[in-house]
Picture 1 (cartoon, helix red, strand yellow):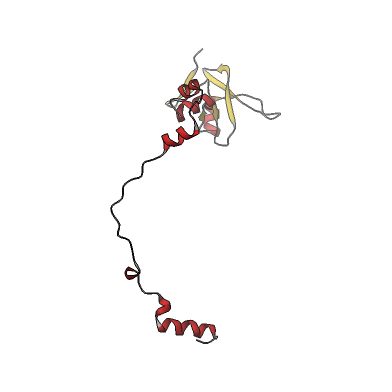
Picture 2 (picture 1 turned 90 degrees about the vertical axis):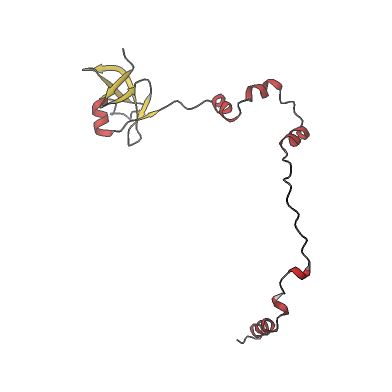
Amino acid sequence: MNATFVHEGIEFDLTLTYADCTGVEWVWTGEQVDGVPLMAQKRAPHGCRAPWKLTDLYWELGPLIAIHDRPSNTDFRKAIDPNYEDTVAAGYVEAPAAFGARIATTPVPSPAVPQLTANHLPPSPLEQTGFRRFIRSLQKGGA
């Protein structure tokens, strides 16, 4: 029996679980009617166990979205660290100090920056008489 079905130019892999647009998951029952696969809810509530033809399901509740198997922890590790198996085989023998030295970045040399002195800084607003007068007027409650 063929594990794929083509409907309206879309190829359905019947070994996968499909979700309809309401989020209900559907699986192939392994049966066909008139050459059309019968689909049943993966977790059907009581009274909703009748299988649907895939074409009717697609028409009424489609589109159907394939749900692929979730990657295993091993798959995640391989994707994150391609040398994961080598690292595990090595037994994590790297000391914390060696790890810190390995991941430490070398400082990027910056161009010489002149040191600022008081002459380079703008004058403080407190040294301006108008500003002091304004602050005193606020302290006295006037303005």
